[in-house]
Image (tube, rainbow, N blue to C red; front, side, top):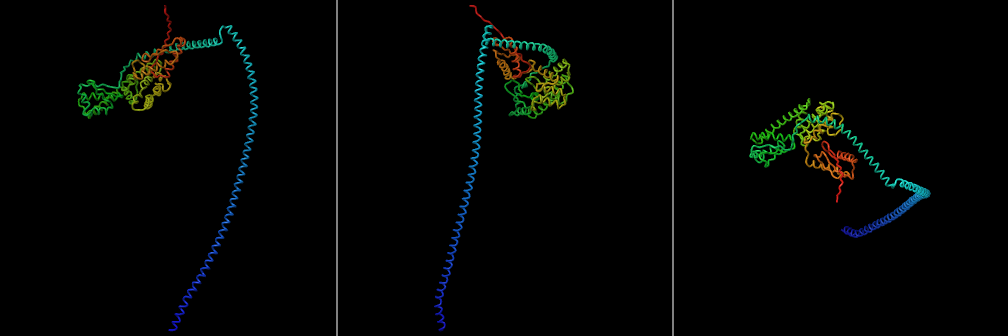
Length: 514
C-alpha cells in the first residue's frame, strides 16, 4: 500500500515535469527549424538578386549590341545613299553639260537658219518682183489677169475632158448596144415566141362554194368540233363570214390548202359531216393531192423533154405546182425557164438537153423551203447532189441568182432565162408595201445627184424619168450623169429585169412684148 501511494505521488510529480520538458524540447526544435528556413529564404533571395543582376547585365549587353548593329546598318545605308546621290549628281551634271552643248549648237543652227531664211526671203522677193514683171507683161499681151487665165484654162480642160469622156462613152455604149441588143433580141424574141406558157395567179386563199347557207352550221358542228377537226387535220384556217354560200380557206401552204379544199368539197357532196368522216375525207384528199403532184411532175418532164429524172425528183417537181413566188407559179416558171434555156442553147450552139434539164431543176429547192431551213439555192444544190445530177446542172442551180460566179455557158443561159421569165410583165406580183418602197427608193437615188430637179418612177418601176436643171448640167454631161445614176441603182437597189434611166433636159426662153 505505501508503495502504491509513493508510486502515484511520483507519477503525479513526474507527469507535469515531463510535459514541461517535452514542450521545451519541441520549442527548441521549432526554433531551430525556423532559423534554418530563414537562412534558406535569405539564401534564395540572395540567389534571385544575383540572377536578376546577371539577367540585367546580359540584357544591357544585348541592347548595346543591337544599338551598335543598328548604328552600323544606319551608317552603311547612309553611306550607300550618299554614294547613290553622288552618282546621280554626277549624271545630272553630265546631262546639264550635254544640254548646254546642245543648246549652244541649237543657237548656232538657229542663227544659221535665220541667216538662210533672210537670204531666201531676199531671193523670194527678187523672184516675186521678176514674176510680177513677167505677169504684167503677160497680162498686157493677153488682156486678162492671171486668175482669169487660170480659171479659163481649167474650165476649158474640164469641158474638153468631159466632152471627150461623154463622146467615148456614148460611142462604146452605142456599139455595144447595137451588137448586144441585136443578138439578144433575136434569141430572146425567138425563145419567148416559141414558149407561151400559161400562168395562173395563185393566192393565199381558196374559196369553196356551198349549196346552201345552212351547210355552214353543219360544217361548224356542235360546239365547233367539226371545224376544229378540219383545221387540225389540214393545218388550214376556215373563214366562215357573211359571204353568201361560200367558205374561205386561208393558209400560206398551197398544198395544205388544196387538201382542205378537196376534203371539204367531198364532205359537202357526201352530206355526212362528223370527225370520223372528216378524217377519212382528209386522207383521201391527201392521196389525191399526192397523185396530182406525181402527175404534175411527170407532165412537166414530158412538156420539157427532160428524161431520166429520179422518181423523188419528179415528186419534188410536182410539189412546185403548189408553190408560188411573187404570185408566179413556180412549176410553170420552171417549165418556162427550161424551154427558154433550150431555145437559147440551140441558138448558141450548145447542149440544149443539158440546158433544159438545168432550167427545169433550177428552183427545185423551193419544194423544201417551207420544211427545211436554208435558201432555195443551197437546198436545190443539195437535192441535185443527192440524186447524182450532172455537175453543170448543179453549178447552174448554184449560180442562177448570182450567189457564185457563173463558170459555164449553161449556167449563164439558165440565169438569163430565169430573168426573162421573171421580168415578163404580169408574171409576178409584189407586196404593195415593198413595191411602193422600191419606187420611192428609185426616185430618192435619182434625186441625190447635183443638177437633178425631180425624178418620177414609171412603168411599174421599170423606168425612171429624171428632170435635169439645164443651167447645171449640159448636154455633154447627161451621158455621164445617167451612167453614174445607173451604177448607184445597181449597187443599192434590188429589182427584177432592168430599169431604164431617162434624163430629160429642157431649155426655155420666155419674154414678154409690152
